[in-house]
Length: 72
Figure 1: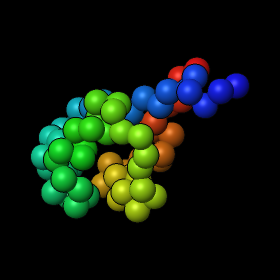
Figure 2: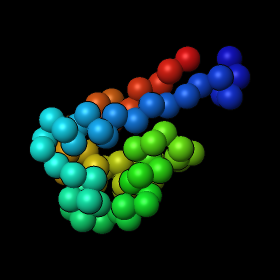
Figure 3: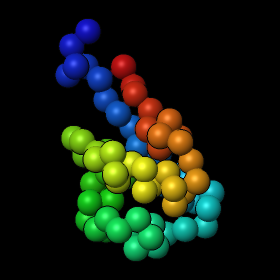
């Protein structure tokens, strides 16, 4: 399988809605710019730092698998 065939979908919108939180609030709590979170939320990110992933999981009280799905 070619890596170009894989796509990762981000589920930040659903997690934010479940928690009654805005992207701006998430940005402030995680310490990541609103612009960078928007890139992630809109599935345009090519990579995510582990420190950012852990911070997102801490703030959203979730696991990495709740944030991302690999679509083949």
